[in-house]
Image (cartoon, rainbow, N blue to C red; front, side, top):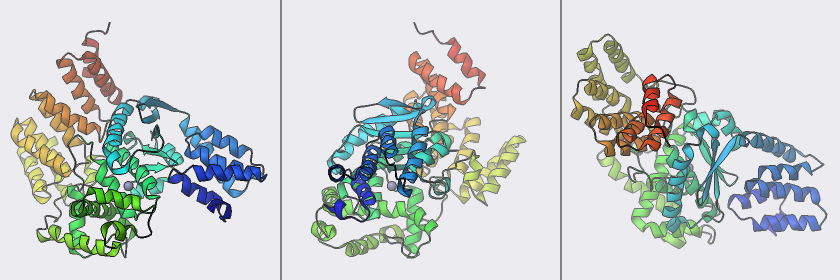
Length: 499
Ligand SMILES: [Zn+2]
C-alpha cells in the first residue's frame, strides 16, 4: 500500500529491503506489471536482485529500462563497477555464510567463517536468526575495489576508519592486508553481522547509539581472549569527555571528528549500562519493540530515552571518581591505508624518545637506548609501541620475565596493535611454551593475518610437533609475505614430503 502511494517508491523500496522485508517490494513490482508500468517494475526488480546478491540479474533488469532516468544511470554505473570487482572473487562456504575473497587471500576465509558461525549461534538468543542464509561476506583486497563495492569514497574511509559495512544485504570489508597494521577485522565482521540483524529486528528505527552499542556489545563474544568491550583507549576518551561534561547519546555540539572518535565508546558504555541495569532480556525486548510500539523505551523500560540518558550519565561518575583516564598512551584502532612504520602510531614527545632510542641501539649503545625507551614508558606507561621497544631489548638481554610482563601490558591496553601479540608468541615459542604461543598468535591473526612472523612461528611449532600439513600451510604463507626469507624456504624444503 505504502509503496503505491509513495512519491519516491524506489527510496521506500530500499528501506524495506534494508530491513529484509522483501514481500512488499515483490507485491509492488507485480502490481506495476499488472498496470503495464514495466519500466518501473524493472527498477524494482533491480533492487530486489541487488539486495538478493545477484548482481548480474540486477544489471539485466536495468538493461530493460529504455528511458534511462538519473536513478537508472546511477545504478547502472554502480552495478557495472560492482560486477567488475566481484569478478575476481572466489567463494568459501560454511553452513550459514559465504566468504568471497581474491584468490590469493582465500586463506582468510576459514578464520572469518569460524568467527561468523560462532557469532551466529551466540547472538541468536539475543537477535534471533537471520531471515536469509547463507549470508554473503565480501573481503576486498584493495581500497579501490572496496570503495566501489561499498558505494563509499576513499576520503570517507580515511576520515571515519570505516573499512567494513553491512550494505545491500551483505557484509563488506576491506582486507586487513590493504592496511599498514591490520585492524580487528574478525571483530569487525561480527560487528557488521550484528548490525545487519539489529537493523532487521528494529526495522532500522532504533537510535544510532543503541544499534552501534549492541553491535559492539556482541562483537567480542567469540573472541579468543574473551569478552571485553570498552578498551583502555575508549575508557580514556570517555572519562576525559565525561570530566569535561561533553558526553551525551547524540552528537550535540561536538565536532564531527570528536563525535566519530567518541561515538563507539559512548554507545558501547550506554548499552552495557542498559544490560547491567535492566538485564539483557530487556535489551532484546527493547530492540524488537521498535517495530511494534511508538515509544519502546517507555513500554519496555518504563522510562523514556531522555530519562535513560540521564541515568546513564549519572553512572559515569564511576569512571570519573577515580580517573585512570589520564592519558597513559593506550592506542586506539588506527587504520593506515598506505604503508607506515610503527613510529607513525606515536606522537611527540614520545616519538622523539623512541627515535633517539632507536638511533642509540643502532650504534650499539644498548644501555643508553634502554634509558630512552624507559623514559618513553614512564611518559606513556600503556603505549604499545614504547612497551614493545623496551621489551625487545630485554628479550635480547635474556631478561625474559621482564620482557613478558611488558608484552602482556602492551597487549592488554592496545587491543588493535598486533606487534606485541606476535613478539610474545615468538618469546613463548623460544621458551618451548607452544600452547601459549599458539593462543597469542591466533589472536594476532585476528588483527594482522598478513604478518609473516605469525605464520612462520606457527609453522615452526607445527614442524616441531610433527604436524607437517599445517606446517607446510603456515610456512608457505610466511614465505608468501616474506619472499626473501631464505631460512623459511629451507625449512619448507627440508620437511618430509607429503605422500
Ligand atoms: Zn557499527
